[in-house]
Image: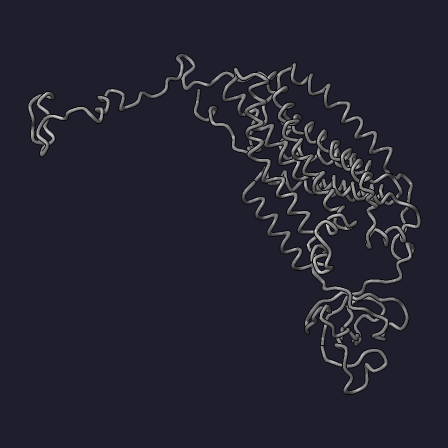
Length: 450
């Protein structure tokens, strides 16, 4: 057997080429996957809001219109009616030349409160303003809302694509294609369905199923090991959904925060805010679950290739040991990701003077704790679930015969060039001969080396 067939892939061995599956394995996977595929497709068709037109912009009650401009001057001055008076204080007067909107090509002076939390504007900054109606040449009709970030964001995206293609090459290209398809599912299915009033949790589960089928098969190829990873991912996502629903109800989490309250008021109809919270938990756990399940299936398959005599029990035991080593890092990744997004909130609560127990059980923090713990439980469960599925399927897979350098005679390992040497003497063996020259009379006549 060649050495390359004896080397098991490391923990992220996703790049192994897909091999044809045996007929029993294909039949087994078809029986396991076909109902899930059909359920996902039917669910997507039932949940998609065909014929529903979602009002946006002014039709949805948004009176503020974004316009763009460039800062041409910055000076200190007064606020409100004192804006044009000399010697006024309390505001920074930002002069913006409009590049679009009703006042395109004209300069408008906009007062910005001079406070610690206000952004700092400089000459040449490309900004976004919010126009609330009224006189388009009056500064009071605008608010400086944000900076334009198109160029740096585009540059960062180009660097990201270049890095992925440079290191991943064709597999990196497949990963980028899968990433684009994931955003397509989110934008064209998940968001419209939730906005149309469908249950957010159900939409998230179906959307996650669509993303997993697309992403895993596009990125890792159509094979038995990928199918086992898909099964493990879907089962783990279902577990996360069930646990999230149970503990969100048990903890009486409402999912209402300022952004969600604004969304409800804009929609004009009811929305399950608790389900929206759980939907975010499922979507957030997708990427990490992908990594865990693919790693486990790859490990089990490589173990099977290295030792075809391993059965289900041995494959499961060995794969679980690999999974335990990988598990601590992915759980920490998920916890740190949620903690990073909630960092401003945690800082605000730290200043409130509350005890740690009061902070952790408050609505805003408790929902992040539930997301983190439920997602982590799903990740922990993904290891034995996926390992068991992979061991069950891989144990029924035909392992290819070892390849030989010459088909007429078997491949022999090269003889060890040190095999003919005498074994090293024991530490207590008496050494004889001339210690200065290293001459041993038992080895024959001594000759001076040339």
